[in-house]
Image 1 (cartoon, one colour):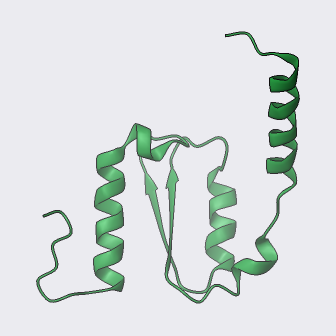
Image 2 (cartoon, rainbow, N blue to C red):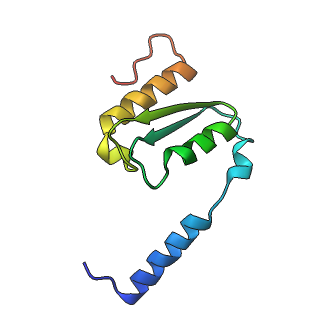
Length: 101
């Protein structure tokens, strides 16, 4: 696929925006349960970055999926579903809850 000049410029602008975005100062103010779900082989958001989120968020649960990179929904959608269900049931227990069916 060949990128046109404007596509390349837009891609570079997107990358600059992603690299400069920083919301760490707001993570401590979150007032809801948060699941930080990371892939073992995620090079875009490595373990140290995910651990930083865990350290800053007050009500947090951490889970790492083995043999997965950054695109968890595409690489391990079933594991993602299991992790989300376990998190939701542990934080919001409903009598007889079964999210799968």
